[in-house]
Length: 423
Ligand SMILES: [Mg+2]
Image (cartoon, rainbow, N blue to C red; front, top):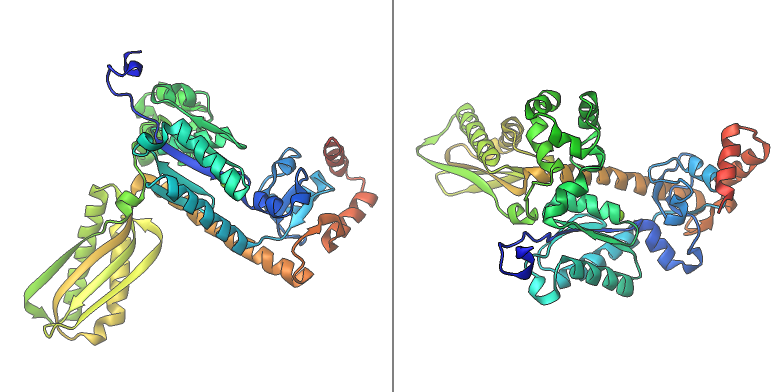
């Protein structure tokens, strides 16, 4: 092809990499306790209501998955090793991973404790193409931190994330631009992280199961099935998103500010002005396809006294209503301090591109996992003191399990025991 011998048109480089650590928490535990290598190890609460937070690959081959109740995991693998979570250790390891990535690639966006997007289009001259950079990163993480990771690469963030999932464990998969459609076509629509269960169900109703089928359906049919999210979903599913890394947008802020010739002295008037400013800012956000997490209200009185207050939302937004709520709440808290207003301003900061809000949602659900983990850890500490590591079968709740499998003739237990004995 002309493009490949350097005289043709420039080929788009699949330089957006998604690096994801493999079974991160479990891998850290196995690294720190080498005697666990090759065993079905899970991290999570050992109590009767415990949940699997992470499962090693030997545990996964037995059918154990994260978010599974610990009791089910124990049935699948009677020799299961349950390790209570050590959040601080994972955070510290995560920081080392991110530091290593930043030492090679300048443009990185961490999206969770064990994942980051990297834009390596600018790093090529130094380290080669995306494939070489991916191997370099993975081998350095392996050598210096003793941990496995996988990398996906594409021209699109959404596709890079799918590719890293397909590369697991301990692999890499870079999709050349011209092979994007071919790569995506056979995959189920649920492989795209921005396509949630609701959209999957809507697509199923019109007979669409694979990403390839999305392209064959008339856009009007898709629009009817998916509603206002149709364009976004088509965008993600066809690998046509070209969103760079979020921090490029995130560092920006936008807003509006006004000074009045005559001071505002009426609280309702101030409220009316700042809510209309909030609407204005929301419109600016939507025009830039961005969402914001932090709202800042600034007020100044004629004597120069300035008050700046901010509030941070759970979910990034571009909704005027959400911004109005926030500025009004801030105003209500501060209004007694300023009797006359000369200047008011509304700004939003911590901006992200709207198409990365799916990632934000995922981050939020991860923070829920985080809470669960901490609760699990508290429970483990309550029950077992500071015991950091024990064989599942020697712990209290597992003793229940042992009893159950000795006395129970539940056909499901028998089936699981058979499956489990295969390894
Ligand atoms: Mg991971």
